[in-house]
Image 1 (cartoon, rainbow, N blue to C red):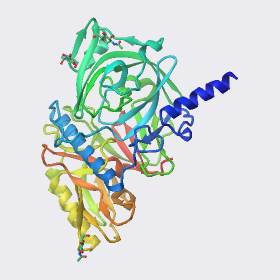
Image 2: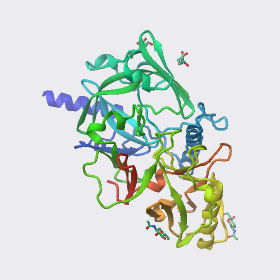
Image 3: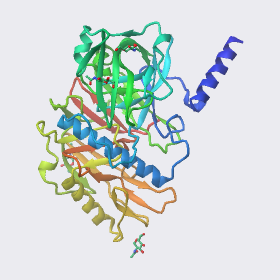
Image 4: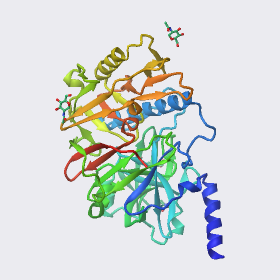
Length: 429
Ligand SMILES: *[C@@H]1O[C@H](CO)[C@@H](O)[C@H](O)[C@H]1NC(C)=O
Ligand SMILES: *[C@@H]1O[C@H](CO)[C@@H](O)[C@H](O)[C@H]1NC(C)=O
Ligand SMILES: *[C@@H]1O[C@H](CO)[C@@H](O)[C@H](O)[C@H]1NC(C)=O
Ligand SMILES: *[C@@H]1O[C@H](CO)[C@@H](O)[C@H](O)[C@H]1NC(C)=O
């Protein structure tokens, strides 16, 4: 009887959250399921389905804000202007399940490889959505005091009634949080005293509704806090949002990582230590290496220029000279004269095409992308676009961003101790 009631309560809760019971499968070991925010398992999918074109345009608009944000990170500016008047809900594209507190409360946190911070909306938060972590119901929850050593690791901490409080900007939003500590469980791994920001106030539309899990490598990041458990190593396989299988995986720690995988060195930009920079040295379209001025690809810690892998941007952005060279060769190879555009994509076709592969050439590793990572097709099949664009021209864009559509159905391994990033083809399940 008790079990039945529990099951019922569970069902009601999952339905209240809009979760498909199929999505509630158990997670084992150190591997979390990764859901696209538009997946049937996500409570954040638009309430009325968007048309294909609306989908693409809204993802592009979010990318624009994210690119501005990432550019501001490399340039160490703080606040990011919101793009052209329109309300843009910009938040990372993939979510994972975390269980926080004692007894555990489940939150679907956004995964962001370009951020260190972790924060969770807490009870009493102004501007957060309705689902919050109720700190009063957790017997293991603590607020950290101003003199706690961790308080020195957040940027611009202040003292609010003895509590360590910090403010920061994220995308086009600002947040205020109390530095806090509680138990968190990821898949089957308990992490007893995890330090995170307990959101007290948010303004703007970029804040992921149930919290942010930063997978960057700065001092208070998940990686730094779980060094003994996960050895600063993780990998993910990102599913396509159209994938009927719904989920991919986030595998934490060195166990179970692929052995056959190609690597390129990770580079560290002291101005922005949490971003995962790599050295991209060329781009091939089909078998031809396109002509790109070396400056467009070069890593430069003082300007922030270079190439990063990011899980939160959807479509790869290249600085203009690099993008133009790739696009021109792509068009030459496709040999269809009638090129049209859609939103920010300038290389679209209204007839079926045969596309060449595109290879990102990194030091020690070439990653050749097949059509599924390069082309987006409208549902009706009437338009096909090359799913990349040049960096937005209204920001100081020096950054090439290898984005999540180009990473889908690959395992991307972040091996921080050995300072390398690996990529291997994998069908995400
Ligand atoms: C956060 O800190 C403020 C004091 O700055 C306090 O009033 C508030 O209750 C704290 N919130 C939580 C959830 O601990
Ligand atoms: C942080 O944000 C809170 C709430 O918006 C505000 O009251 C406070 O003045 C801010 N503190 C700093 C140092 O900016
Ligand atoms: C080129 O595409 C446009 C837009 O789809 C169409 O209106 C036009 O007829 C096409 N031109 C040719 C020569 O196919
Ligand atoms: C990548 O491809 C280029 C030419 O297409 C080749 O010269 C180079 O050796 C390859 N690099 C690796 C690491 O396989």
